Length: 129
Image 1 (cartoon, rainbow, N blue to C red):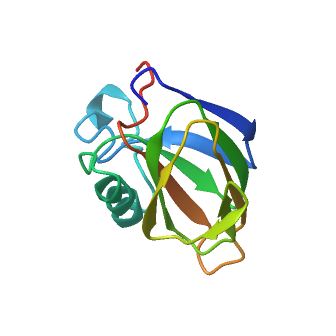
Image 2 (cartoon, helix red, strand yellow; image 1 turned 120 degrees about the horizontal axis):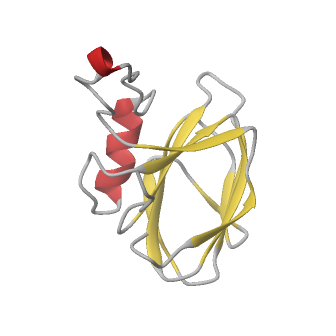
């Protein structure tokens, strides 16, 4: 998030940072292509918050995560259906919401079909690579 940050309150079963298209063209050097498993949902979440479609997102497997924003941001979650709240108010997948600093985003279990969700924050997810 460009130095602004989030606090992970609950990490869920597996939450990773993913980009798209991953590491294409690196297999000869021993790298698996990686990247987002559901590239459509990944790219859609980014576009909903105004990021480049290839920017990094949080790939959440099965849900059950919670984050607190350290600064104002636009947030979108795309992918599998799951119950979500932003500061205690219900929000939906495939929509973006403006969130103030201190807001808590909670994502429940994704009951299927599908079980991956992509969380995008305006400004992206900045991690060392």
